[in-house]
Every structure is written in C-alpha cells, then in structure tokens.
Amino acid sequence: MNTVFAIAGVVIKELYRRKDFYVLFVLSALITIAAGSVNFFKDMVMVRYVKDICLLLIWFSTIIIAVITAARQIPAEKESRTIFPLLAKPVSRGQVIAGKFFGCWLAVGIAVLVFYVFFILVTATKGGDWQLMAYAKSIGLLWLMLGMVIAMTLLGSVALSAVSSNATICLVAIIGILFLGEHLNKIALRQDEPVKSITYAIYYVIPHFEIFDVRNLVVNNKPMPSLKACGLAAVYAGAYATMFLYCTWLIFRRQRLNT
Amino acid sequence: MRNISTALMAVFLATLVFTLATAVESEFRNSNTTASDEGAFTKLLGDGRRLFSGQSVEMADVYLHSGFYPSIFDSREPAAAKAIASGKDDDHTHHKHDEQGKCVHEEDHAAHQHDAAGKCVSEASSSGHVDEHEKAMSFMDQTLDPLQGFIRNFRITQHSHLENGEEREVLPWLKLAIELDPQAVETYAVTSYWLRKNLRRVEDARHILREGIRNNPKSFELLFAMGIIYEQDDKNDSKARNIWLAAKRFWEQQSSEAKEASLDYYGKITINLARLESEAGNLPLAIQYFELTKLTSPNSDAIQKQIGEIKSRMTGATNAPAGKLTP
Image (cartoon, rainbow over all chains, first blue to last red; front, side, top):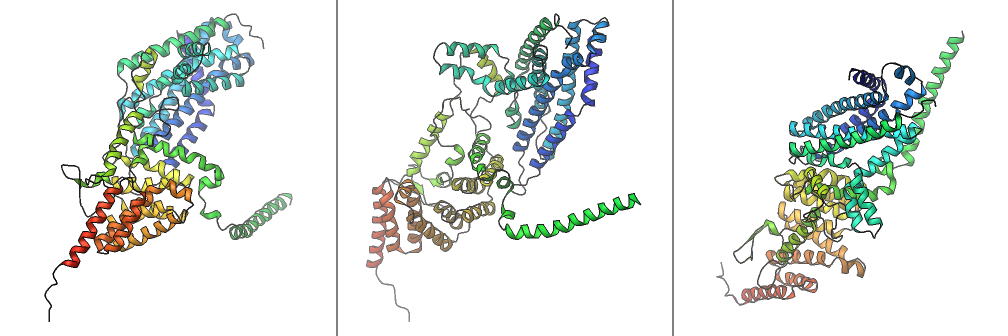
C-alpha cells in the first residue's frame, strides 16, 4: 500500500508543478467575477445565475484537469522511459495503475476543494445562503464522478497510443454521457428494432456521470439527495471505477513497454 | 554607443506608436458613430446573437420553475406558452372579485373583457392556462425503470414557481435576452411585467419599456404596456390616453395579416381607451371605442351590454331635472 501512495504522491506533486490547474482556475475565477460584477437592476440581490455559471465552470475545469492529468500518466512514463526503473523496483504493474489512479484522484480532489472554496466565497459575497451540507454533498458527488472519469481515462491511456487522441475521445464520451446519458431510454422508445434494443443496452452499460450532477439542486436551493442515495452513488462510482481499473490492468500487465 | 542607439530607436518607435494611436483613434471614432453604442454581444457575435436570445428567455423560465423543467427529450407541447410570458398581460389577479366571480371595480383595475354576466373573460382562460401549464409540466411521471428511479434521487422532481420576491432571479436572463435581441418586443414586456407586478420596481419597468420603445418605435405592445404604467402607477390618465392612442395608430398601420395575428392587442387597447373615456365622462367616445372592441371580442354580447349601460347613462343624464340656477 505504501508503494501505491508513494506513486500517488508523485502524481500530486506533478499537478501543482504543471500549469493546467492554475490556468483553468484563473480563467474560471475571472469569468465568475466578471459575471458576478454585472449590476442588472441596482440594489437587487441576484445570486443564482452566478452560482450557475461558477458551478458550470468548476465542472468543466475539473473534468478537463482529470482527463488531461490521467491521460498522460502512463504514456509519459513510457516515453521518458522512467517506467523501467519504476518497474525494476519491487513494484507490480497493478500497483503502478493503482498509484496513478489514487494520485490523480487525490490531486483532482484538491483542485475541486480549491474551486469550491472560491465558489462559496463568491456566493457569500453575492448574498447567497451558507448551505455547507449541500456544498459538502455536491463536492463529494463531483469527486466520485471524477474518480470514474480518471479510471476511464487510464483505461484509454493503455488502450490508445496517443495522449491527445485518448483525451479527445474521453472528453467527447464524457460530454456526450452528461448530455444524453439520462435520456437514452427515452430516445430508445422512439426507435425501431434492433436500434431500440441496442440503445437500451448502451443506456444500461455506460457509466452515468450525469447522476452526480446536482448543480441544479445547489443553484435552486433545493434539498440535496439523502445520505443513502449518496452512498448508493458511491457504490455505483466505485463499481465502475474498479471495472475500468481492472480492464486497464488486464491490458497493461502484458503490454510491451518499448515505444 | 550601440546601446544608446538601440534605446533611442525604442523611444522613437514608442513615440511613433503613441502618435499614430491618438491620430487613428479619433479618425476611427468619427467614422464609426454607432460602434460605441453597440454592446459586447453585438461586437462579439454580430447578428448571430439573436439565435441565443430564445435560449436566454428559456433559462429565465427554468429559473422561474426553480430548475424543474422538461428537457428536449421529454414529451411536452411545443406550443405550450412559457410560464414566464404567461402573466405579462394578465392583470386579472390584481383586482378583486365578488362571490360570483364578478369584477369589483378598483382604481387600478386594468380594463379587460367580461362576459354578459360580468365575469372576467380572462378568468376562464386563466384557469385554462393553469391547467394547460400543469399538464405541460407533468413530464416526470411514474417510472418503472430502476436506473431512472435512482437518477431521480438527484433531480428536482416537484413543480414550483419562484415567489416572495425571488422572481428577481429571472431578471439577469431576461436582460441578457434583450441584449442579444433588442427587437424581441415580448422580452421587454415580460421583463417590465416581472419588475412592476412582482418586484414593485415601477421605475425600472418604465426604463426597460423606454429602451424597448427606443429600439422598436412602432411597437404597439410596448406602448400599451407603458400606458398601463402611466394609468395604474402614475395615475396620469392623459398620458396613458396619448400613449394608447399612439399604440392604436401603430396597430392600424400594420398589414392585414399582422392585424389578424394581433387582434387581442387591439381589443386591449380599445377597451382601455373606452374605460378611460367613460370615466372621464366622454361617453360618445367611449361608445366608439367599445364598438371597436366589439369587432375583435369573442364576447360581443358583454361589450354590447356595456355600451347599453353607457347609453342609458347618457339618456339618464339628458332626462335628469335641471339643477337650481345660481345667481
């Protein structure tokens, strides 16, 4: 386990050495502050649109960070040939994958926390309520979703040759699922066989990232899902992440490392 | 020596750039008189910005429903009116009714049409609209799909509207919609409605309508809404009359197809003018306006009844005994 956390520690250090997080954070902050500083009708407290924009930027930025960070982990090790000394130590390929996953997940978790601190400050400045329990659940659900995203991207990084193609395919798949995933059953109902059955099968097979999207509840100050529902969501995310990581290991364990 | 010449060159270039900038800027300003009036969206998107205006109004509608809103994949009536726009002409809830549902006259009562029994015509259509709206928003029915059932734990599942002043949250999107499409007359009317009726910000409502009239000088819809503000909030009947007369004139200048499509507005304008003249004692003029309303009204019997009442008032006034002569 120490080996896994040692590899994870290196990944976390890599996140704060690279510029991706800073660029996305500054961009999100600038857009949110610009939107929040617009005075539509003086003296009126309007906070929902700022929350909406800020949460959208947080989701967008953290997904980008998660995909980019996870996509380059194993290819970068292979390209710089640091994978050989790493595996020469008593480290198995499974531990490398687990370490990379936990490293990316923890690093992205830190990024999510920083983004949310900014979000809470902006909301409070605009006169919004302190819904700390709601924010905690929202952070937790986003982090769980990013775990699935990272596991899926790691699988892509061993299955596809180039970092860019893996990142692009993963981003298209994630955005597609976020927009369409929940509605695939409705789309299936309008199709003829065999498209109907195929669409239904896709609906049940894909990881439903959109489940974890509770932005609408946070923006509209609605009650958050119960702890039981959040727990079930955690099990759901854990199951998919494990499946993706297992598939990654299956491919990676016999993969030739010479590029 | 070489360093000095490099520094001098840099100073020379900086001076040249500064001089050119001051010269070109004034020339540019003279040749583009409209550029400074354009908003950021016009500069960024050009005329393409209009495409996003409807989306912005829809966002306002989503906010009004506290996030409970059908997606493009949910079955909903495409023709179903947005709740955000449904109230803009409806002054019905803001005046009193007796036990039979008849209107009880109030000073700020915006005239609207009644049936022969004196009941508000808009009441039937209003309750019909509420039913229609509830039907349109019942897109999230019982599901047997276990995954869908699980997903609903993370969704808003109850239909509610913003209230207690929280309606202000829709305003940024409506303002954005106006910025995106300054020719969308309905957006100004909707924005002014929410500002005036729900948030009691009459001056802001007037400002929005003025902006709308400036961008759409022949809009009878906006002139009608402005007349309502003059009549109900300012109690300035003469200004309201002038504005409504202008609205009537612009309505009449339209093509016959456009008139057909906006007959209800003509009815609203003429019935308000009729009531104004009736209250001012200009009874023959009031009858004229009621006659015009009758042409467009689905309840011509009720209008005829009001004409009859005015005629009887006129006859009563003519037959009344003369008052005592004062020296």
